[in-house]
Length: 151
Image 1 (cartoon, rainbow, N blue to C red):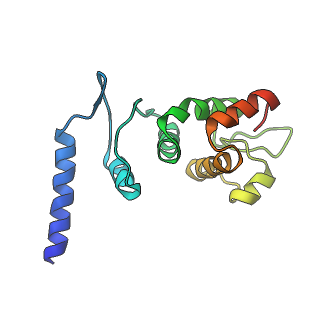
Image 2 (cartoon, rainbow, N blue to C red):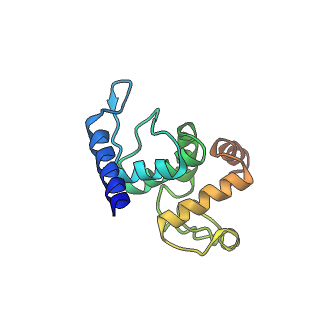
């Protein structure tokens, strides 16, 4: 019982202190919530950003995936790819192929990375893994896309 109280008290104290201590980058105040702190603690990364994450729910989820997989510097490249492919629409369907979703995976790509779904989190998780496996990072995927008009 004492151990549970100590952990709960420590966790509450941590979040209270987090709310009281301003997190700043330049002149901008960052919005960091409990789920971001928990994710940071889970992967043992510090919480510091060069750019505040986007407000849109789908883009915000993608931003944190990019942040923890590579770094915030890869965000612009990832955003460029997704804008070219689907404009961030998790239900985008190419009328001329089986390409579907945020990252416009073909059925054959879904077979390798997971089931075809309209769930944006699953799509983005698969997309990050695909880019990591095939190109290493979004910047290299963009370089390939600019030459071949696909990635």
